[in-house]
Length: 436
Ligand code: S3P
Image (cartoon, rainbow, N blue to C red):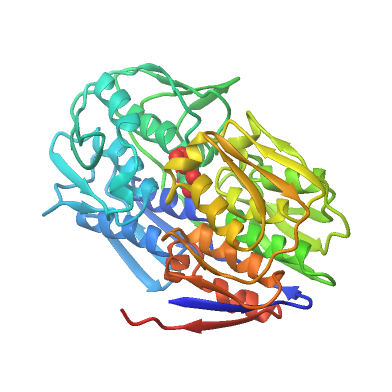
């Protein structure tokens, strides 16, 4: 699929974004091991979460689906997984594979986790290593998927994460549910804390002391029913479009407002962007509310380093697009993790934005953008990465002439309905089928 994007004049409206991806994975996975029934509304029916659903069902958990975004999970208890009839197919979803590795470390039977070629390029030893220390047998394929896991009796450990990663942290904490004593994970900087919040809401004892998180083993998880709030990482694309297209005004109600996910809002506000965050309630131990933005009259360059990086780890492609319109030199450092996401996001965004006339330099652990530069329409490629495809679509809205985003079907990995949503705000985008 290819997107043909024409320059936008103004975007206006109130739009919902689909359910948060991180919470959709977690609510389903943890609900599967709860004692009883969890009802999930607003669950994200995107390719990545569908992979989690497939795996959970293959592990013997009964999940009803009265509507596309509505799941009823019949939890089997902490010992409730059964050996799957074949390899567990995680598709392109890193969260599915890494969190399941941690959970399966608590089960004495063997499991094999496989992924598509894109996921099979991503590092898995970072999860395997601590799980082995806890006593599980974990074999990767030269550091990658396919991954073999055979769990057993686990020991609690104290583990210092070499990189800030919520997926690795979560895998260790989940294995910690099955250990003989408390497990502590120390992060170099705080990463998203949804696992901690949701497990706490399900009755698990989890303490944070600075950057150290300690979980106590448990006998049972309480089921949890919730309406999953909108994904702030999806909202970021609509907010960016509102900031960049003159005359715009966009409002998004019902968004997850967890501070470990909103680094991009802080960054853009510091650059001078008129974004408002209006808290409205909570769900599953998470704050929820409305995001609102109008077009920015002037944006100032900024530096992003250190602890700020994990707070906006998925937003760097769209952040780079916004930085092309800021006055001055925007620098991103300490972000080498971007090289092992769905694509090498440093190389990919630099290459594609350069085709549109941006001045952007690559570094081993980040990039530098010299702004402001007018963008021009071009033929650009998603690299099979949903966040690249959406960032380039937003760039196309402010480019001169037409932009073609090739290989855009991957948008459905996290934000089904993205094109329709941005069209409803007033953007002119044509969806073209491509026959190979
Ligand atoms: C996620 C954690 C992040 C993020 C990913 C979702 C999660 O990955 O990039 O999109 O749900 O835990 P890392 O843990 O590898 O940083």
